[in-house]
Length: 145
Image 1 (cartoon, helix red, strand yellow):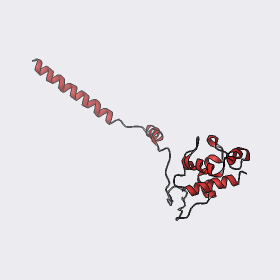
Image 2 (cartoon, one colour):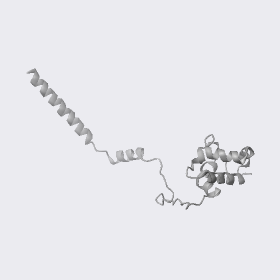
Image 3 (cartoon, one colour):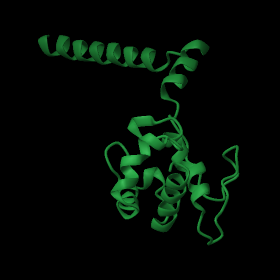
């Protein structure tokens, strides 16, 4: 008799557990809950590759030509050097650039390529060549003397 009760108990437990699992998995979210979940799990950024026109604004392909200092500055450096983000010297701010320029242009080139303090290597322009980064530094220095 104990064996029979034990089997019934196991069967009842299994049915109860299956019923809970079924009711939990079939729970439908309201539209508001779905929107909330989508808002919490949406991507935080996007990636545009060179030549990709699906990003809203076409990213110009370089066609093998190096970018000018102005192009690199406008496309990458201005994000920080335009507003002084993270202590970056602002474009055209002679006082902020004075001591840096005194260190020498090759030193500024090295810092821009390798990164310094809050500035990551190549200032987040990983696709830029060293010469393109140097051209951007030269462009900023020329406008900050």
